[in-house]
Length: 300
Image 1 (cartoon, rainbow, N blue to C red):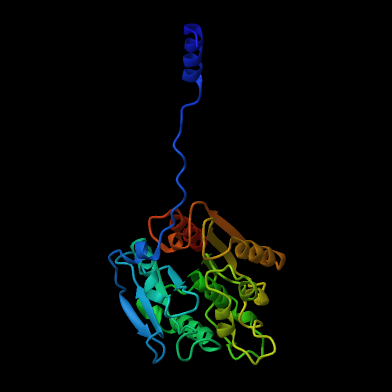
Image 2 (tube, helix red, strand yellow):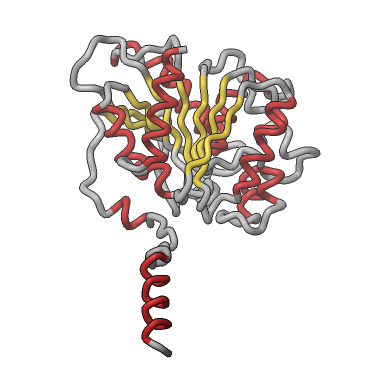
């Protein structure tokens, strides 16, 4: 190459775009990332039955005027006690307590525990929610507008609790006057049990659904799967991580389409670079979005 050619090549190189490092792939949080943190403690633990899982943890703000805005919280874990219990929500419950909310964090018997499945898992969630009406006022909880927040399988149960007035008349789960829920925020939830059972790529598997809804009934989804109860008649926000490897994203979009078609007020909020654990980890964009939606829900 001549000197003139070399000079031209160097000039061209100096004018080209600078080299950039490759973008690192998203590394989602793991359960160990969450549970390895120092664990906060609730202010009260109440029982609604004899089983060790028939408990409610109550988280109360340290100050502020009563009655407190109250969040009904439902944990996930693929409806299995062996995977998760209410303590998985301790960190976000504490974060809400610090923000001035009271949290009613319920537990229930999973399908892997005696008495769980159908109707036990559903009956437990209902009893834990209804205990709020009996015990809440003495604790300074405001029952006029309850917002339910559920994660994963708990997203299904939170939506189901909001739809209990729509249960079939012949369902053993139907009650005359269930606790009214004004708004639901589902975090990476699985509201459609039929779709979940038909989706082998969901992180809970398909076999667990049969254990959850039971057998020997003509239509086991009629009083268990949320789309069967539509319209719920309450506002719903779905918060989903775009990189969630547990919950297929289409389960959220498909449910939103069905709920909208039924006339419900439902919105899907997609958080980029977010997996499943980030949805219940403080100091993440996903949790910040949930807190924003909570504030808006209580202001309605």
